[in-house]
Image 1: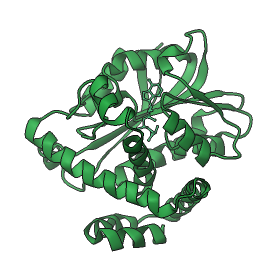
Image 2: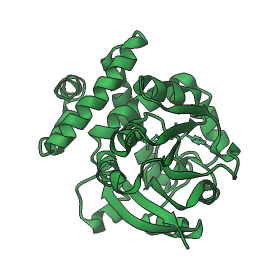
Image 3: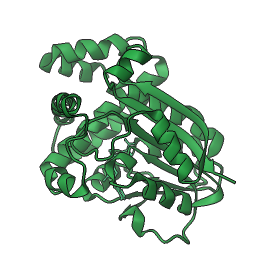
Length: 297
Ligand SMILES: C[S@@+](CC[C@H](N)C(=O)[O-])C[C@H]1O[C@@H](n2cnc3c(N)ncnc32)[C@H](O)[C@@H]1O
C-alpha cells in the first residue's frame, strides 16, 4: 500500500493527502487484505508485460473522469448515459476505455472508503452465511476481489462460479485469481436457465449498469434456492460513464429489493465523503448501499 500511495503522491499530491487522511486510521486487516489483493494484481499485470503503475495510472484517470461526471450530474440532476446503447458506444465497445475503467476500479476497492466499507461488510459476514457444499455464483465479478474472499471464508467444499458479460472483465478476473478453482463463464446473466439454482449469489455494483434493475433482481431471485442468500450492492448518486440507473437514496434501493421478492437480513450504507447526513443529501454525495438478502417466504 505504501508504494501505491507514494506513487499517487508524486502524480496528484492533493488526492494522496485525501487518501492518507482516512487510510492512516485503518486497522491491520485493511493493510493485510490490501497487500494480498494488490500482490495478486501485480503478478497478473506483470504477466501481461505492464507494471503496477499502469493500474495506478488507470485509477487516477478514473478519478479525473469522475470529477467531470460529478459536475455534470450536479448541473443536470441525471446520469450522462441513460441507455445501454449509449454506454455500449462510449465504454463497452471501446476496449481501451473499458480496460482503464476496470483496472482503475481494482485500486478503488481499497482507496475509496465507501468501496472498502462494502468489502469489509462482506468479509465480516460472508462466513456466517456461506455453508459447506453451497453452490456460489458471482455475477459481474470484475476484479474478483469478492470471490477470492468468499473462497477464503467459505472453505474448499463449495463450488465457485463467476459470470461476466465482458471478455475484458473475465480476463482480469481470471488473471487475478490464478491458481484458484473457479469456473468462469463469459455470458449474460439473463441467459442462465431458471432451472439452475445457487445457494449464494454475490452481485456487487451491477444493477446500476442496466436499464431495468428490477428485472435483474428478479432474475437473481429466480436463480436462488428458497433457502439461499444473496449479497447485493449498488450506489446512489454515483455518476460514472457506465452507470445508467439512478437511485436517489437508500430507500429506493430497499423498495426495489422488496419488490423483487427479497427480505433484507443485514445492510450497510456509507457516504463517499465525511459530511453530515443533511449535507450529504443536499450535495447528492455518492452513497454505497450493501445488503445480505434472502427470498421472502
Ligand atoms: C462495476 S463492475 C462490478 C465489479 C464487482 N462486482 C464489484 O462489486 O466491484 C460491473 C460488472 O458487471 C458486468 N455485467 C454487467 N451486466 C452484466 C450482465 N447482464 N451479465 C453479466 N455481467 C454483467 C460488467 O461487465 C462488469 O464487469
